[in-house]
Length: 82
Image 1 (cartoon, rainbow, N blue to C red):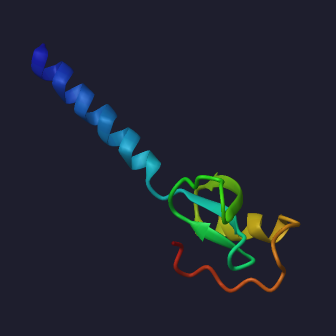
Image 2: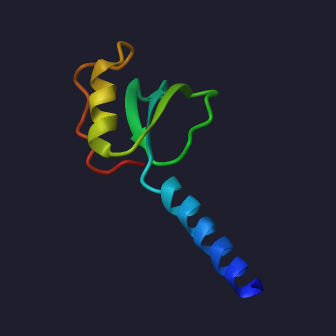
């Protein structure tokens, strides 16, 4: 019974960690005057003046970025999220 409980705990912990990966946020970067797509939950202060997300894919984040009025329209492609 203890081993079954241990296995269940490991499966739940692995699932939670797996769900946290692959998330993306759109952040307003005041230093570069751009909206960047990042892979870690941002802290809004200083140069990061807003954050939106999380999104499940880069494509979802790109779509969101295109609809945020504070983001410049001539954004570079987000091939490599930070």
